[in-house]
Image (cartoon, rainbow, N blue to C red; front, side):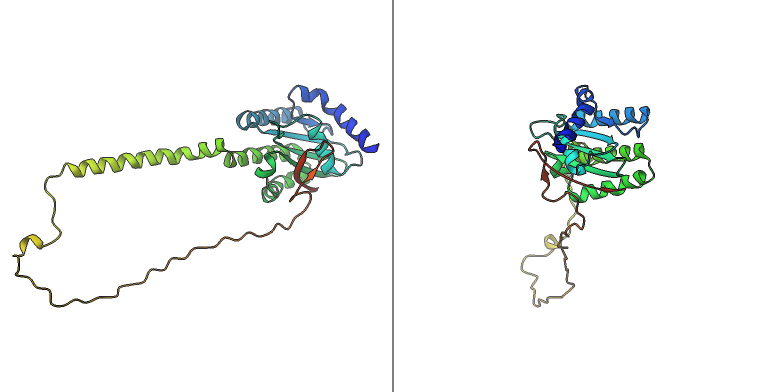
Length: 251
């Protein structure tokens, strides 16, 4: 019963704004109007470019629910996420308990692995600890965009443009050199065969001379297990039946 009441409270808080495509929910009143506007603009660009949802929410409390399940219900019952897999990510901040949680859904579970979430936390946690909530949220959104830019086909295509341009220039250079070589009618001779009378030269001695040894080393990469917990790894299923991964902690 308590869980149902908490869920209804979440839905009442966000139902109307969600219909208006809002993605920043400052229920704990931690952000200025200008900060909310800047975050909405940055998130809108990510959603448009990558078809991946990004949500930032602050709440005064989680109604005695574990923060990861509160975050899952917040995301699932608000209808966030792209496509049938509800692709997206959420940062939830609880002001009373000073807790945060990153929730991943759909392809977000593959893109934002444990190691990626830990690096993101290292970026925004100093701001959270200084009560700079707007700064922390801005860093989070920036890191989401950076990760998507490196991971998705759209981002990889943009990153490859300089290499493709360089490859085109190299191909043009090689073609011009080949064409130039074909224009030469007189070629330099590096051997003396044409200057030796046939039958006048006899090789009487052959000797092998050892010059050097070349050794090539290849590094074997190994993966080390993560030392942190908090909802990562196999993930969990929210009350809606949707699977998520995530990680959180206190600040």
